[in-house]
Length: 201
Image (tube, rainbow, N blue to C red; front, side):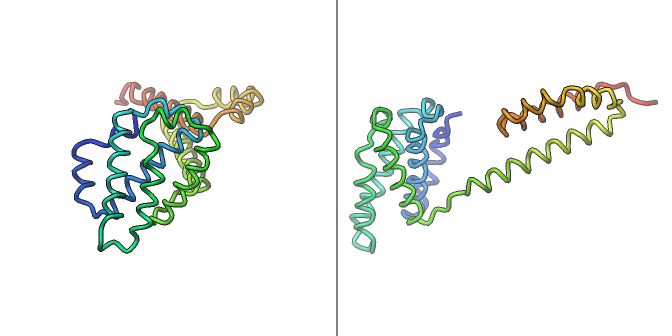
């Protein structure tokens, strides 16, 4: 699903009720996400909706312009600078045809602005720890389901031991997301097997 699909009328109206500073922080972080997709040449960039991007960009530039022109705003020069950073990137086509070095520099500036706006990015190390925790929890759940199902696990254990070398090689080459997916499939099939057993009388 396109992550920009959350820009629904309801979400837009809710953003409009937020303070200008909160609104610009939200818009800037969303725009930075798009910039990162193109700077990193991630496949997901092809799924970004051009109309949603133009709307996001338009609202971001207007918010920057509004704060830069507000007499009560003490950081008018700062917000004028944000407008100057964002304004040239009118469309996805511009991002897609830009040099990687230029996009890398743009992404670095976007990240620096995020910090100045008070946005805290989740550490990649914490993300990996969370993924590992999910993997361990899923594996433990699968083991408990199998253990409480009354199934004879000895043949399965023997087969696993016989194919340890091949299996471990596949595990090493797989991503964490793939491992989680495999464990999830195992849990689903184990649950189906358990639920399909005749009830004891």
